[in-house]
Image 1 (cartoon, protein in one colour):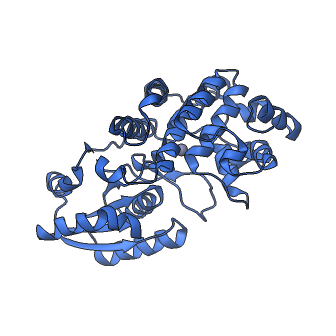
Image 2 (tube, rainbow, N blue to C red):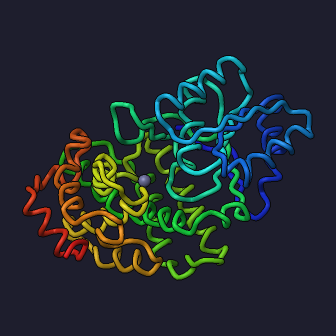
Image 3 (cartoon, rainbow, N blue to C red):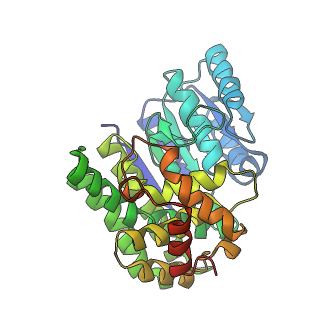
Amino acid sequence: MQLPREVIVGKGTLSRVKEVMQRLNLSGSALIIGGLKSCEVAGKRVRDMLEQEGIVVDTLIVDTTTIRDVLMVEERIKSWRPRVVLGVGGGTKIDAAKISSFRQGVPFISIPTTLSHDGIASPLASVKGFDKPYSIMAQAPLAIIADTDVIAKAPWRSVISGCGDVISKFTAVKDWRLAHEERNEYYGEYAASLALMSAKLLIQNAEVVELGNDEGLRLLLEALISCGVAMSIAGSSRPCSGSEHLFSHALDMGNCPHGMHGEQCGVGSVLVAYLHRSNWQRIRDTLKRIGAPTTAGELGVRDEEVVKALDVAANVRPERYTILHKLKLDYEACEKVAKATGVIN
Ligand SMILES: [Zn+2]
């Protein structure tokens, strides 16, 4: 089980990167992986602070997390051997830092600048172009340094997406328990409870998730970190990724424009909560309350794409037993579900 050694959350915490590196015995050299934007809002400051302390710093800009990007980062790590890799940015930058540092045996520190999904704290990374469209095991961050002053400047839509990802743990845990009951799959009560608690706390306190409210950002941040820890404890993405995630991956695999990961998982969670015969209305109402999409139109996809994604979702990961694998719905049945939940008209 890999868990972060240090989690530092709050206003102005970016200035503590050097201190954390010292405590973890990682001073000397650091490779920053970020995007143009994230380096502007955070990466440059981190670099300046570290250089002032005599730490040698190199920066590598990545736009996406394709195999090519990962190999490029790995080449830099191989030739330069930094003591630590710092992932600065949203999901893609952190994933690129996470997977490449893991493959090269170097520790990594997560410095999120947006909160769009739980990858900021999890040991899993999603890489485009690998044979698997879903996340694969990499390593947990040795430390997470989340500066809410920086995160508050990110687009609000990323916060909404992060909330959708957390709320979707409701159905992820239901699917995990189902796999345990019907397929005798390992089920970790502690990891499941942690993921479920994050979703519950967010639903109960949804009213603080509003623009300009730091309390909401902190709530989401802590929920995302807890979800990451739940996956570390479980040793897999099971507590945080069920059929709602398969639905989201199926939408990603289509050739049409689609919503953000957490937005799609939120809508997926409404659909599969209905199939689990649980309180799908509560999930939908919470998503509505925070301004997250609850319909195909709000996700920016056509009705038939939603139905098709639900129809093929189980094939994305045949070995991961969920309610979709159990029910084996056909296209017409999927359409009925989407209509019954108001996701399509
Ligand atoms: Zn997710």
